Each structure stands twice: as structure tokens, then as C-alpha cells.
Length: 425
Ligand code: AMP
Image (cartoon, rainbow, N blue to C red):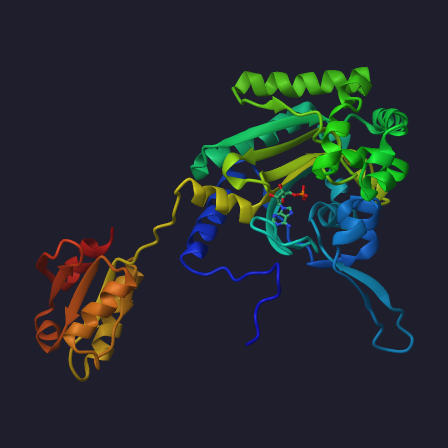
């Protein structure tokens, strides 16, 4: 038997009803904040991620699905391609490629789609997973650099999670400063790591040389006490970054959004500047982050684009669904009615009735004229329908239908032109 590849999975009903309900709510909330959808390709030039996400990140060093795409003709060069491990780099590439900066306004873009990372699969961690993300990006003259953008994005996320009915979330907030702050902080980390790094894991030993900030991403338990004692980023923020972070916090306070400051949260991607954040959920265990994001003021320039500060986030949709399910949220997209044709020749009458009802907004399904009454009731039960509508020769003649409420067991006779109103719940 051929099985799905480890780390990938099939999403089946009824779970997919919940996925769809989440996505519908996401689109509805994002639209109210003037976000519009962008769809970028699932694979891109490998160098986009190497340069965008960062050469020394876990994503780029060990997690990308990369292959050499051979030219089809002898004259064509082969090309290194990669399945996207995240979507921000692709969005910024598209922003640059289509000259969206020339519109001179803020671009508020969102996406929903699969991402791919070669991670060790476990609950809440997959090799193909889904992200719902959004980016606010534009020229500084359009206000893209303002801390108000950060606060608006965070406020939108809080509203989205509230409207989805998720309760147990916590917002963790940090500022990683600007490039100059981080250079100074990296230097301080390098110094602080010198006497202790030989006690740490191999990855940390490498990171301590190449990109010490990434040491803070380390999950190895034995390394944690060492990491706890390392210098904190807040001491290295310059005045402008410090003020910027205070402004973001003041706006969150003003709208009543609670957060905790987590100075270790530097996020696993190199492009972040200033505000970084994660929303975590207690029911997710080790994979506690439902979503993460932050500001990326230099990303466009590092991809040869114009100055285009921005802020964005990616929600791990798989984890969001797990968290909702852990809180008992289910999508009950139940069927209104099951139409049971009774006797030869009734299939076409049933189809006609179903057509009328469905066009009138009733969710219904159909049996088959070959089913005996008992089998129709069993099939109606399995379908989860609220009512069964019996359709035989007499009903067709009289245009009156026997409608039975399957949970209450009660039965009524309903005229054809009343039926849609009666069934639609
Ligand atoms: P990142 O792009 O690493 O900032 O991740 C953003 C969010 O995507 C995380 O907070 C997770 O919810 C989710 N995520 C990242 N990697 C995975 C994965 N391998 N499987 C499932 N969800 C993931």
C-alpha cells in the first residue's frame, strides 16, 4: 500500500469543515482591515530564501527541500529551486518584481497556503504545513515604518483569535532592534559565549562563530542554563529602537491587549528588526507557538529592492486548528435534510426536489429509489441530517411531504412551497 509521506498528512472531513470555517473567518477579518490576497508560487529560486531568510538559520541550513532543476534543452542552464519554507520572502520578491512600491501606498497583503520544511515530524510539526500570513509593506512615506503598523497588526491578530473563539492565547513580545543594535548585541554574545561555548551543542558552537543570535533559538535542554545567563537584547537597543518599542507597547496598552515581554524570543529568521512577537497556546505542548512574526525593515533592500519597511506574521494553521480543537471548538456543518426517494421512478423527482431546495439554500443530500425505507433511514442517520423527507408516488401527486425530525422522532406533513423554509435552519 502506498502511504502519504512522513510529515505530510491528509486533511479529512469533518476536520476540513473547521479548516474552511477558520479560513472564511480569516478572510472576513482581514478584509475589515483592508488586507487583500496575494498568491505566490510554491517554489522559488533557492537564493531567495538563502538571502531572505538567512544563510545561518535552521530553515536554510537543514530544512529546505531543494533540488537542481535541469535545463530541458542543452542551452538551458540548470537551476537550484526550493519549495517555499515560508512566504514572506516570496511576497517581498513579488512586491519588488511588480514595482508595487510605485503605487506609493501601503500594501496590505495576505496569503493562505502550504509551506515545506524538512523537520522532524511530530504532533504540531509537519513537513508540509499551512500558514495564514499577512504583510504590511510600503515606502516609508506611506507610514510603513510607524509603530502604529505594529500595533494595528497585533490588534488584528487578537481580534482574529477572539472571533475564532480561541481563549487560551498569550502574546509574547520583544524588540530585536535595528541592524546596528544587533551587530553590537551579536558582538556581546560572541564575547559572553567564548568561555562557555565548548559546553554547548554542536549547532551552538557553529552559531557562536557565524551568527550568535541564533544561539537563542537552541532547544537543547542542557544548553538552556547557559543561554539564560547570556546578555539581554534590551540593553543593546539604541534610543530610536527603545522609543519605538515603547510606542508599540503604549498603543497595545491603550487598546487593552495584554502581552508579556520575552527577551529570548529572537525568532528563527534573520530578517527581523525591532518588534518581534509570538502568540502561544498552552494546549500545544512543545509546539506552543500558534503564530509568529515581526518587523523586517531591511528585507526588501537585501533582495535588491527599494527601501520598503514592513511587518508581518504567519499563523501556523495546523496548530491553530489543534488549539481550537483542544478547546472543544468544532465546526458543525450539519446537513438539513436527507431526501429518500421511495419506489421505482422516484430518483428524478427527488433530484428535482433537491434542486429546488438546494437553490433555496437548504443543505440536503439524496438517497436512491432502490433503497427500502429502513435503509433510507439508516443512510439518513449516517449522513447526520436533521430531517428526512420521504418522497414516493403519493407525495409527488399531492405536493405534500412527510418530514421526520430524526433526533426528536416527530413527523409532520409539509407542502412543497413551505418545505425550504421549514428545513433551512
Ligand atoms: P515561522 O515561519 O518559523 O515564524 O513560523 C510561524 C508559525 O508557523 C509558527 O508559529 C508555527 O505555528 C507554524 N509552523 C512553523 N513550522 C511548522 C511546522 N513544521 N509544522 C507546523 N507548523 C509550523
